[in-house]
Image (tube, rainbow, N blue to C red; front, top):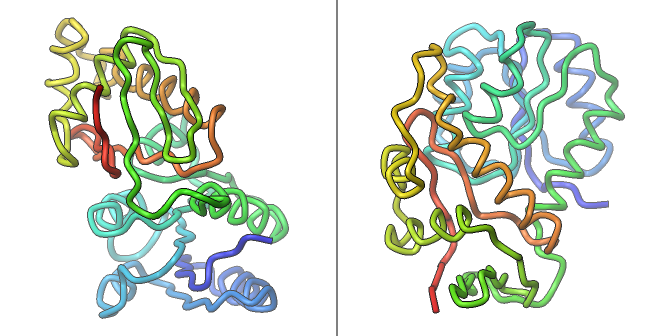
Length: 235
């Protein structure tokens, strides 16, 4: 089993929080539970946990805003478990940086399986050293992962990755990606997602996930853009 060593659980339902925390501790995970998002943020070790399980409807900072704050300071796995309803909830939390979303009611076993799945993706199976570069091979239109896996790329994928190469680990703004891909001004739908950038990034992530068990270093920065959080070279 692949579990994180430490985990922060943030949920204002006291019974659910206490019972879930105890169940996770029985699996050998060191759990610190919070009933208020502000309590987590006030903790000097708020950004040092190996994993986070968050509700969305919280006293203090709203769960979605808490997720954005954590993503600015931590690359740890984040699972959102919430009863918040709405057609856009899943998309909003994933865009904000969550690795997985479960809708309540949900069993402890389902939460555990989700934690294991996210953590397994975040833990290299073997081989490549930490910090080993990814390589964009333009002639063959492939991305070569540190473990040697080769990811076939579309023209749009190559264009996106060229932006990340140029950014050298910094955030690439949506406007930069839109210009590179020849996208027009997004329609005024209220969610800012009608330019197709999210779909392009999603397809690229899926291609990488199918090719290698390594953690995909491509992360979103809510309402700003995306970042490739690993060395990326081009040939």
